[in-house]
Image (cartoon, rainbow, N blue to C red):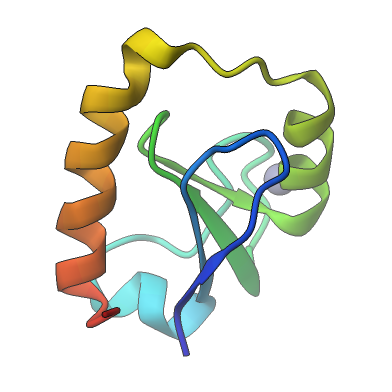
Length: 86
Ligand SMILES: [Zn+2]
């Protein structure tokens, strides 16, 4: 079941299963390493889904830019609707 996950740097992230990813028309693969993402992380500011490994690595190097928050919010709200997250 898709859910919002807490991100320590303040990014908006949704955890999704492979099945949910396929249901919304995705391929269920990581946008970074192209492996199957059985548990994926949708990163709204990038509009990409990462596998658990790539998500962790991305978290370590990612820098939050406030000027990206508008597009992040837009993407986030869209996927919340698609995934039925309150
Ligand atoms: Zn990956």
